[in-house]
Length: 166
Image (cartoon, rainbow, N blue to C red; front, top):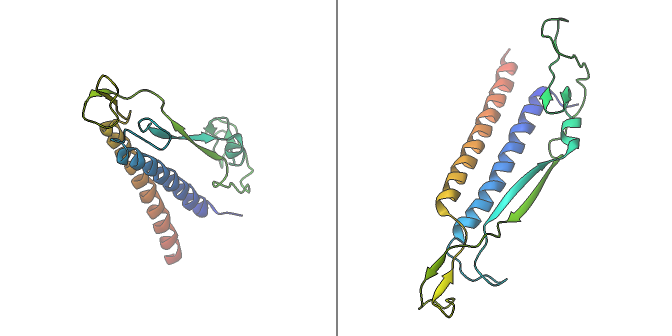
């Protein structure tokens, strides 16, 4: 059985893993932002990571009904909500999430560059649909998410350390 302390480590670690995967996809997009010819032909298409929550994730978490967390309470009537006392469930946060990498098929900008090797008969080159500015904003958001999970992990570690000092 996992303790709530281990549960805190698991949640933070899963969050860091998700944010790291997002940052890897964003870094690939930024690296290929100027690629006009790929091995598949045509310009590079922006990739994105979709995180899908399976039903099994919430069904393994104690006191989780739908999308709301139901808290255990010590005194009936203290907090008016349903009480669920099954706290011996072992949630597994490595399960329950599916990662789907997709491709944005929107056309990129047409730029007039007649000397470019990928230019069409009129001298226009189909550029990648990656916006470096948007990717940097997404990278900052993923970085902040990673940082928040790192802070939560460190706080859980400090709680564990302090509890040993008691």
